[in-house]
Length: 274
Image 1 (tube, rainbow, N blue to C red):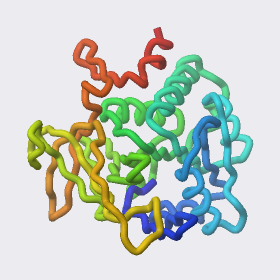
Image 2: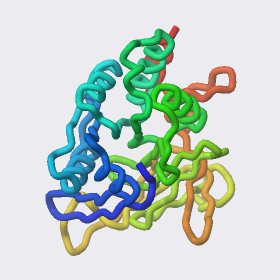
Image 3: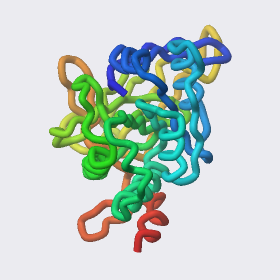
Image 4: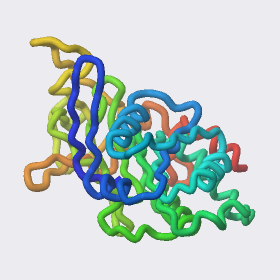
């Protein structure tokens, strides 16, 4: 994804997202783009992307559902896909990248057909770790080659909750030293200390109020404040709020092993590598 702001419109029964211009142009020029989606994934993310892409193409974009990375790679090759757009949450992405790394180390013959094809990843849901992104970026460069389009980002991470949908967007670059989620204007987001006071420049708890309630269609409604269970540092740049290096609150389920922070939901994947 290009990571530029997406234009979103909403009605009582649907969401419509207009893709970013660089990605839109790339798809229009592509011979055969495909959308990759894990078999166990669900929700609005797939429907939004597919609906958007369908509107841009003379024929519907092919959707590849997979259980293992090998199936995804086979689908890319079979469909002659020169652009592959993977929409996945970080937990499933860890499993996907682990399987792809194994294929690379074992010199799987499938991978020799993938050089020069564009592979883009949109991570949805919980925040992501920068060290993981850099590791995955190196792996995808080895498998597919580096992206030639300078205005595209290999990874874009969408941070949000089921109750609030999108809160912020992070656009990955190889030179990044920290993760910065740009908070969107449809949410009122603050970082608070232990006493509940808003703070800037220090790590605290993320709280967010959705200014546009997408769950109901009414002339008036309550605007609840959600405690996300995540920690981050708030920083302002040109009047825009950024959440720096968000992470799970250790009290909400996180392990620290030899200096490495490990979310509990990724523990089965890490144990499987042993």
